[in-house]
Length: 201
Image (tube, rainbow, N blue to C red; front, side, top):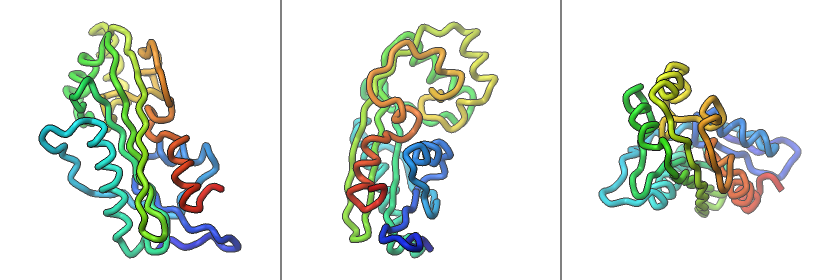
């Protein structure tokens, strides 16, 4: 069970994600979760659901699912979702090499959006959400470049089939907006929400 830090009036923080990238990003701004409880919800997009709405819904649903668990009683819950979108198309998390290759070929030579949804549930049960959108342009990739990237395995489990904090950084020709959002958690929006819930002030 998450508990308050001894000697402080701050509530404990539960992170509803197993992502090491999100833990590292929180550490960057001096925040450490008391407990990590990955959510296990259906992440299927609804028919006609646009990427922005999907990212917000996923973040909210993940937070709500964890907040209802006894281990999270009395704690603040943070959840996030990262969506890579080409137009209205939501790219999948790459769980196999073929999916990753398809994503990279689609992103090659064009601009796409990375949309981060963040949800925080405070100790009163109030839900607050924010969305962050970053524009990324990927250079035109050769077949050899795609094959070399796939061989490294960084793409596994990544939305859109790439990790900007790794070797794929060399493919990014242009970025406008939050870099941390592309890595997995928009820190400005997250810090603002957590401060409102009594964490990180």
